[in-house]
Structure formats: structure tokens, C-alpha cells
Length: 177
Picture: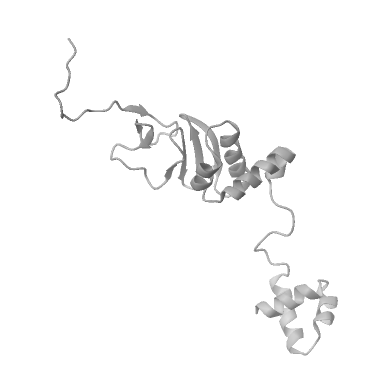
């Protein structure tokens, strides 16, 4: 005999447990949303959508899709991160806006990664062309030399010739100090 709940009585929903491979806490799936038993995701876990999540812990990141580890990499590995983003979209597991939100970038960045991957494969995701952003073009000892020569009254052109860099690099270096 099947018992039918009374009208107005709270209905308990069916919960399905998924245990992560890395021995983390069991996740409960309720109505398609990944949640822990207490009803919220931990700070290290970000749900991309109802099928995918990203877990960050101890300098590593794991991308899980449908309970299967899709990608695992260290936080500094930008090529692996961009490949994981492209892979989620190519397999139809997530859309651009969900992936961008979960990985903390813009949809424009995600589209750029897709174009690079389609044009040149995995090697194209490595890094953008040009000089690395945020890296000084002139070493610290040479910076001091530039400052000393500038204080002595040498022109930017003369300083650039002595050090072996462009005059524009000297102007930028003197202006930044």
C-alpha cells in the first residue's frame, strides 16, 4: 500500500549523494543544484551550473563535470586553466557566461581562448604574444644606472645608447620613478 501525504504536509525531496574522488565531503544534489548538507557551497567550491563545478584547494584546482574529473591543475598554470574553460564549452557542459563567472574572467576572454584553441590548438593557449605584462624591461641594477645618469644631466638618447634599450623605454623608466 502506498502512503499519500496529507494536503499541506511538507514533502521531502529525494537526495542523491555524490562522493568526490579526492576524498572531499559528499555533495548532495537537490533539484539540480550542488549543495552541501548544510545548504551552502564551501568557499573553495564554485558551481558552474547544475552539472559542473570548480573546486580550489591548496594551490590546485579541479574541474568536475557530471561527477567526473575533467581537469586538474595548479593555480599558476594558465594554459591548463584556459584549456579547461574551452573543454567545458566544446563538450556542451557549460555556456560562456557560466564559465566566465566561475573562473573569474569576462566572456570576451573565454571567446578569445576559444578562437586561439580553434586556430592553433593547445599550443596557442600558452601565452599571448609580446613582452610579458608586469615584467620590467630593465633590470634593477640598470634602473639605478639610468637614475644616476639622468641626475648627471645626460640626455635620454645618450642613456638609451649606453644601456642598449630604446629611448622610449628610458623615458618611461624615468617618468615612473
